[in-house]
Image (tube, rainbow, N blue to C red; front, top):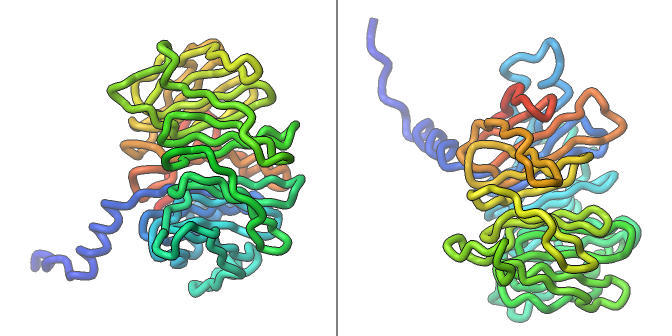
Amino acid sequence: MDAPGPLGQVEVFQALRQLHMTIFSQSISPCGKFLAAGNNYGQIAIFSLSAALSSEAKEESKKPVVTFQAHDGAVYSMTSTDRHLLSAGDGEVKAWLWADILKKVKGCKELWRRQPPYRTSLEVPEINALLLVPKENALILAGGDCQLHTMDLETGTFTRALRGHTDYIHCLALRERSPEVLSGGEDGAVRLWDLRTAKEVQTIEVYKHEECSRPQNGRWIGCLATDSDWMVCGGGPALTLWHLRSSTPTTVFPMWAPQRHVTFYQDLILSAGQGPCANHWQLSGELKAQVPSSSPGLLSLSLNQQPAAPECKVLTAAGNSCRVDVFTNLGYRAFSLSF
């Protein structure tokens, strides 16, 4: 029997692309049955969670139902409204109709494309974070130009720019009870903005607090989340729980590796970042569980809590590989989806 011949150039190229893939962003469909994942090559893959979780699932069920080229560069951030998938790349945000995407046509065409009003036409900064403000029917986007841009989703116009950061913005979070947004960035500051006045109302320079500071990792804030009067943030400084009204750090979590994503879930805090695991924390700072993932580092966690699809209630985690890990209960990786 002849030995198999060498891989063709196309196969080698595809294998290298898989090897060097990073998945930056995820978003759940409005029906809760599909997951969008965006990678460093500008592609968005759509996975059927309902098919992958079915008792009759095959290996093919863990592959995308459709993959399309969304941006020329990486897809850094995504979010979904009740009808649209919004994706952000270098200097642009695009909207796609979920109804069109789920027709599984490979050449999916965007509904619209917008560019924030940058200071010069030569500027093409990456957009690292998208945040929906449902009460205002607005989208906030932020990234490499150090500003938060507010866009009216009805008209598609940019209504204001919030300025205060002195370096890249990495992350955004919404305080739902009050129209306030938090932003964290490379300058080491978490800034709180009042959307009614478009003014910065609070600044927390995390790295200046001795118990949080880790100079060897830098001052950058890579992730943050809020729950009422509480905020959790991390990055270069240690992952820390803060009481916002008093600007006081209440819990410093004993995690050496920089964290890139964090979220509140029931009475826990979930975080992920450098290292192949998702971390479950008690609010007191105790590490409740460290669940292994298939990627050497994680950049995003997504909790599917869509009431329309309780059978698809999962946690998904993605980062420095071509795989999206699916946790059917928080403490166990059931399987991985793959580009």
